[in-house]
Amino acid sequence: MIALKKVLVASDFSEPSDAALAYGRELARSFGAQLVVLHVVENLLTHVVGGDGFVLTDPDVQAAVEAEGKKRVDGLISDEDRLVLRAQGVIVTSNAPAFAIVDYAKSSAINLIVIGTHGRGAMAHLLMGSVAEHVVRIAPCPVLTVRHPEREFVLPDALMAVTKAAR
Image 1 (cartoon, rainbow, N blue to C red):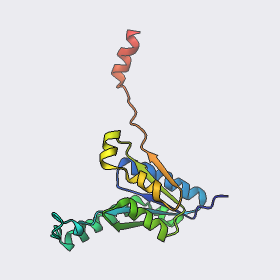
Image 2 (cartoon, one colour):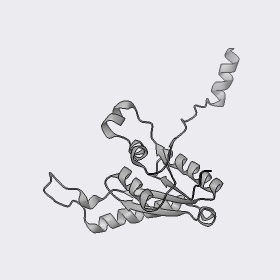
Image 3 (cartoon, one colour):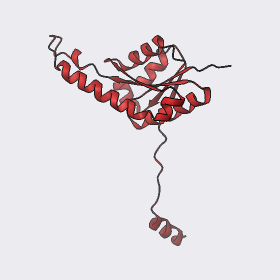
Image 4 (cartoon, one colour):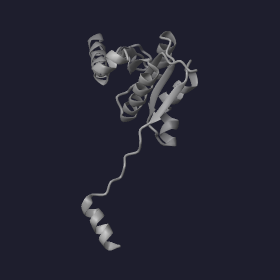
């Protein structure tokens, strides 16, 4: 029997992340597991120009970015999630999102990571890589990747009527 006690959903606030959250929430509910929603905030303080060590951002800006991230993560979690799933929002600061997600999973005894994938084309993937792919490769636990369902193409009613009349 598979025992899920902690489900981690990694979120970048995108539509694929929202889809991943829906899966993570249901899995946590089904297994009686705790839900953790994690967002990785870029560490602006480590950005340097040409390796000279010039800090481009002051600590107040970093703190504001982290506070905004925490607010947005907390906004993804409903009161019911907090009560039933013991859900919590977590912010981690890093310039390597995949490693930050995996490090958190290791240190927090996460049993399953759920992460959205953007489904970019081959060239974009080659140039930018994929956080989800890196997480799958290095995670200490199973990883469920969720691709946002394609948007459904719906014909307007007037066009449908014309199409039917033409038959």
